[in-house]
Image 1: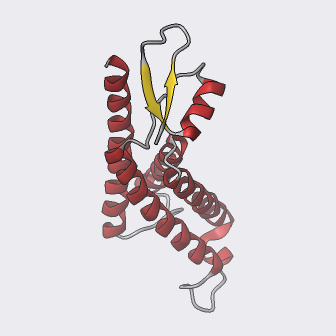
Image 2 (image 1 turned 180 degrees about the vertical axis):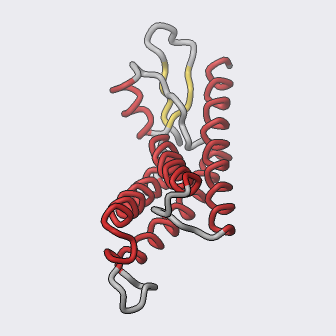
Length: 163
């Protein structure tokens, strides 16, 4: 049974929030349950995005370890800058997967930021990050799904606040 969080100024208004959302909202937002991803459709979408983010992060980590590069060192294959960028993106995606699985907003924001950086680097065309067309389309679809999740969560929170 989810806990009920009520605003101190108006005790008649009560919203259901997860215990994590109550702790975070009490500390940072003065008691309001803001953008709770535990609402049923948003929670399912967050879990699906968490699995996709985990797969992308583990794939990037495998590239860093040289799983598919053969005898060539990943550091020489990507260069120092490319290796550092890939390491940061891999870590960001793994942390985003954790945040999305826990159904908190920062996971979606972190995944969106990592995807925007990577797709931006590809579109700049400097050769720092390369990917196939299918990879680009997949990551663009995940980025759009992440934006849709954030928008859906925002609208559902505002709708519940108006009730």
